[in-house]
Image (cartoon, rainbow, N blue to C red; front, side):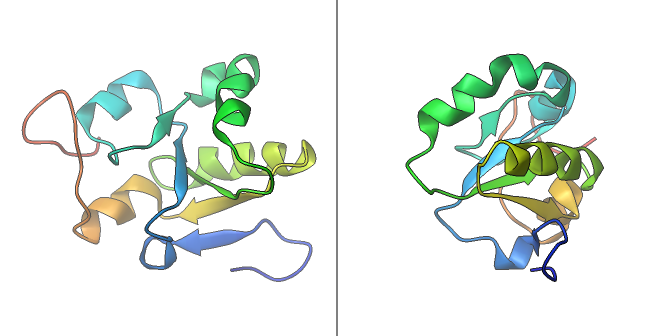
Length: 114
């Protein structure tokens, strides 16, 4: 995690097994490979689709935000924090996920991250 006043971050190895994972990559990136059970809302559509996330969140539940490497997810996590939602950026994103050998599902076989 990070120091007070900074954006909360975690790495793939510290991600809780039951984490609510929000993937903010674009559709083609998602189709190429994503974490099973993740909620997909592309960053480009995020503000208009925020309700999809809030419907899935229990009171006080933390959401872990992921993109390809961590830049877009950091922006979305900061926005969520401003909205009063407990959000953590997943440092390294889906590239780190894949490098850690975590499973991916996708519309194309084999699944890989672009």
